[in-house]
Amino acid sequence: MVSAVTLWRGLRDRSYWHHFGERFGFGARLEGSGIWVHAVSVGEVQASAALVSTLRERYPEVPVIVTAFTPTGAQRARSLFKNLADVRYIPYDLPGSVRRFLDRVHPRLAVIFETELWPNLYRECGRRRVPLVLASARLSPRSVERYRRLGALFRETLARAVIVAAQGAGDADRFRSLGADPDSTHVTGNLKFDFAVPPDIAERGRRLRELYGSGRPVWVAGSTHSGFDEVAERWRLAGVRFVRRSQEFSRVAIDQAEALLLDSLGELLEFYASADVAFVGGSLVPIGGHNLLEPAALGVPILTGPHNFNSQDIARLLIARGAAEVVHGWQELADRVTALLADPDARARIGEQGRASVDGNRGALVKLLWLIEPLLAERA
Image (cartoon, rainbow, N blue to C red):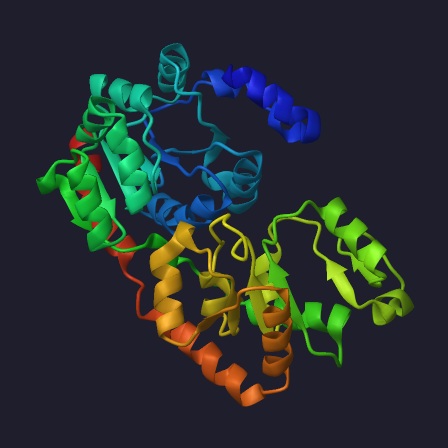
């Protein structure tokens, strides 16, 4: 069934067919016993970057394996880590697939980001005495009720996690209520706050602004979810003049364009750095929202919709600090973008609140390493 779903998805997105054998645990055998980091998709991959980089610096002789579930997550991991890690897909949670995967990567430690509760994978790690750490672990109240209905299955699964490093106190309480060992459940914070802003990001943003928006106000709508071609078609029907990031255009075409369609991956951060205002999508409808921390760390005022349950604590913090503002529809979004573009003092004030909010919540990496490193020492 799971392979049929992947094959069907591949009819629309061929990247689902790439490295298909890895979905069943096949792949190259690695030399030595390494550290396995699992990050399901792009957001978790980005959050894992600080940990992966630090582990390679401190343990250069220990290989790092990074797995993802989605093609975009795997693509982002390969782009981000390059030679730092072996990147592959996590296998489906089938007994044979899990055994084949662990036979090939034989990790000394597994670090699972956020909330990936896979019973067969956890059971096999326990059988092989591979320590499990849930990093930046989170559970919404709605998820707790869903897992609780599954009864003993997930109580057993969580009991196998050696350490739960929860984002917040509420997350820690919810993990304990599902069966996590209270003595092994800690509050370490959200590792997403510890991401490193590239030192040249302001200059990269300035160059993009000169290329596409010289002399004009710029606002960026990121992670808006519709496919690139769908957005392009809607703009054509609406009469919007636009250019695509992936295509070459003349200076005249760029100057006459009203919008840029960012139909590439891995560039959103530097486009946020070019912006006066950022709208973070996936939030006007109940998708759950996307990464609010990137524009916040860059000091860019943020607009977001009301649906941010994927990162509820982050959204609540930024809204309370005045670094982000909620809009409830396209007209309100348009009005607030227009008002902010006309008010540089307000933009500076809001942007500074965002930067301060991110800087004041860093430190989860240090706490996570404090939990991980004794396990590495034991396994060595």
